[in-house]
Image 1 (tube, rainbow, N blue to C red):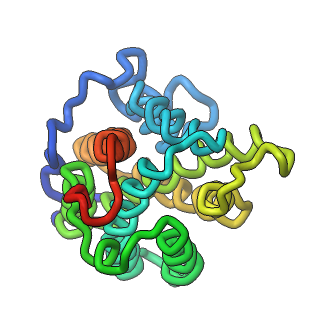
Image 2 (cartoon, helix red, strand yellow):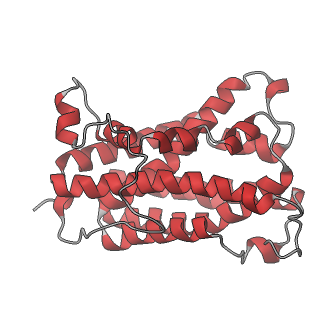
Length: 274
């Protein structure tokens, strides 16, 4: 028995919604075998992206990311978004740590450990500087009131890592990082000149963190890992991986949406919205 079909794999997911989404692209092949048969160089992650349907476009071209890139995003909205994202990152770090433990090779473990260092150092430094510029008190970002989408996202990641194996963990990590690479790359390409980049550093640096070559290489490596694990999995497990991937993309959309819902009106510290 290989790691691709570990008995630890269980029925997932249904966090904050059904795993059978109406947004699934009806033209996308229902199984990976059907997808692979029609392509000369099939990738499991390409099939997953197709199966995500409209949710993929909703996440990678969301109003929040478009307004962020155009320097039009309201501080109230970004403030709410960033506080929730910081709450989510703690769980993300834990899930990457879990992936280190279940990764099949020392090379894989090393790649994941290196990225953990980025999350713990570079991104954390960015968050702290951004919170200071946005007047977010430490009491708020260190112990935030999490939103339904944040809680659902955290639950999904923890369930995927705790109840599944390496492939299940990758099935939530890949879309979580790939969505950011996609929108940030588009944003960076659109603002190719310095005067076209957001003037607020906490917007421009958020794009830069997710559009650099090192991050692109890491996402490609993550995809390759899931390509291998997914292609080797049984059809039943492939279906679970697809559900996890698709639900992650759906929650990215909900996560962005909630920033606007919370950012309406006053969102300064102390008004009850934190």
